[in-house]
Image (cartoon, rainbow, N blue to C red; front, side, top):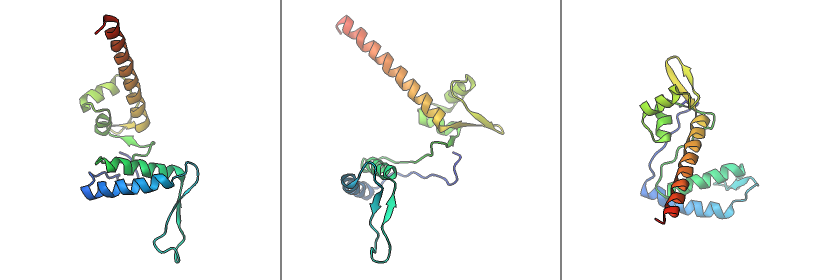
Length: 150
């Protein structure tokens, strides 16, 4: 992934899960959809409170929600570029299958030397497309089952 600093992910411990549940509940109740969110300073007499944008606060609640379920969380900037392995992992397919999709020009990419780099937005767009196709096929099968009375 091409980012300024490596983005880490980890599996939360049981203590992390418990703390994430508690913190998520507190933050979710205090969250306003448009106003900046005030974080309380440790020593409010010496330092002012810290404000974060409302969108960042919502993202923090989502992160805590995932952690409270024991899920690892990884933030990826939308403009990030993925390696072929990272993109294949995102799509839950093998790297050779992903390379075939690139060779068939189903997903746009660029080459850096001999390496392929895939913009995250392109990989996500392809994922949305195949998810929609799968849902349509499932709906068609369900309608066919209804027609047959199964």
